Length: 391
Image 1 (cartoon, rainbow, N blue to C red):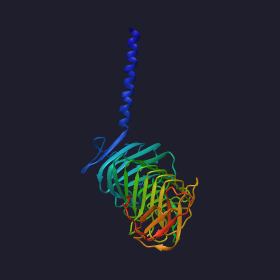
Image 2: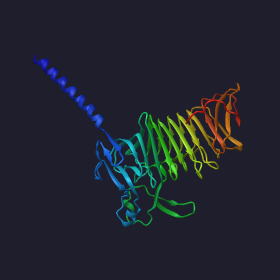
Image 3: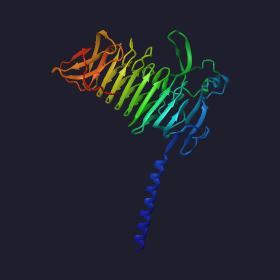
Image 4: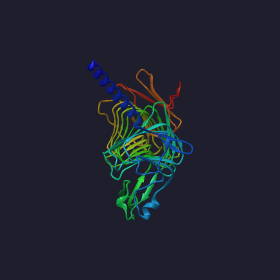
């Protein structure tokens, strides 16, 4: 009898342990609600205590304490600051808002979960991941779109010279030092993207992320940028996606759907531009460069297409490669194709295998979609009959 009672007690304790574990797993996700007149964290008004894992402020803090540094800090009505690793789920809508992640002391991963979020920031990146040191591997930041959610991020650029700051060593943003194209030496921090990061950045999820740049680029990363899943649509005034550290920033697309689109009013910009390498392993990638001397896909260390469906148009020819003999078409046209014209690819049986209508001028094109070792013909200006696909 005692043995049965002991077994029952032990099993009861194990059940309690598992029940507690499940409760803890749910509580590990910090939920942030963007309401009309306030911001709540796990049901309570957000704190302004900057020693907490997550807190509210209305002025960016570059870490300096001199008058020069303080005067450089940008006022933003709603800043949600994250100081610790963890999962943070956002929902709701706010204007004049920024999600700022200080990764200088974080060890671990930060997962920003977007669950029907709409935020805009007119004088800085709307999602701002910063670190004094580039390629800091102590922390990785992931932006995840929740299943069936549609999210909108609008942001601008942040640029400040720190050359005369007496406390430059205290600045917690990455400081660039170099010479401009005009031959002028600079010491500054500069973030051009609606979403900008000093460290590696990962995108994934099962929802939709619409990104619009109000000044320059869509996504800018000084570390690597990886897209694993989800739908990411970028409308940009410069490079839609830019890995901007020379020789180091790689862009890897493993899946999902990516639309890198330069707005009609853009004066320059590639669809996807890497100062390192660009590798597409799978997924659907549409990249539309600014008409003129820019490219749909551009990488200093080469573009590699190993799978997926790719459509890239621009004005420069850069030969792509593959690591696994994946077949794609790449053309450098003798004459520029004018906007509102169609492009149709026909196989050897005169069957259309790919067709689209362009909204801009271009002279280079790359298409990949399970092509075989056979002859294809490409026609400009053909009439397309049938339903138009969506991107």
